[in-house]
Length: 302
Picture 1 (tube, one colour):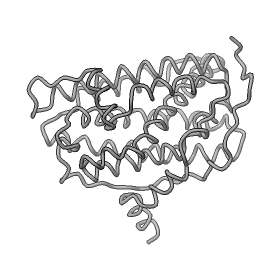
Picture 2 (cartoon, one colour):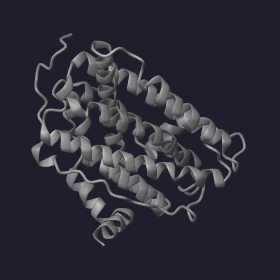
Picture 3 (cartoon, rainbow, N blue to C red):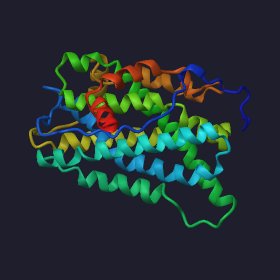
């Protein structure tokens, strides 16, 4: 397997826009524990985002601040700075859901402590001598973020189109958080991949780090869903299973297993570019109507 791109990925030029961090805020006092009525499994499977994203997106920001000196393209540098601002806001917004869950009797601390260890210790900075080893570890993490961003954009595109959540009466505040975040993931979906291509772009590294990221995400997500179901104070013997996930996917309240599997060869294609997936126009349209995003824009204009 060659370690070079046999075909240069072709970005869709019309999908590129300047990135802005929106200083959103959400009020959770009226949001029930099961914000998707009558469906604790879907509620808690999506709630895993609140466990993973604060630590993960702070890690993104930390790594990208280290890679900024390696960027030689001014537009890409501006995109990365915009990405950093958006990811920092995502981490804060999801972090603020955790006290709400704890107040409702579901303490996420045992799980979030493990996630913090993963990103801060296992994937954090290592005591390496300056030079090749330190550069290798930085490039590994840049490539891993590109792989993770493939899936955050996949989820963002899904939630923007998940009309079944509306039909089933999902809590509007939680739905706005998810769709505001999802829209920004679609909006900046190309940045991590473009950065990886700019500083490295090796195909073997792309495949290797995808395998690591995908395995970690599946493991952490199912573990988080099981944690929530087992510790939900309103459930007796709450469990989460792959069968439940497939059933919710068929119902339209979670992504389908098939859609997730089909996303794999797309990312591993040598001609892949994130701008070829999702719609910036749809993301921008949602952000123009999002209660939280429009409130943030009004506040910024004052």
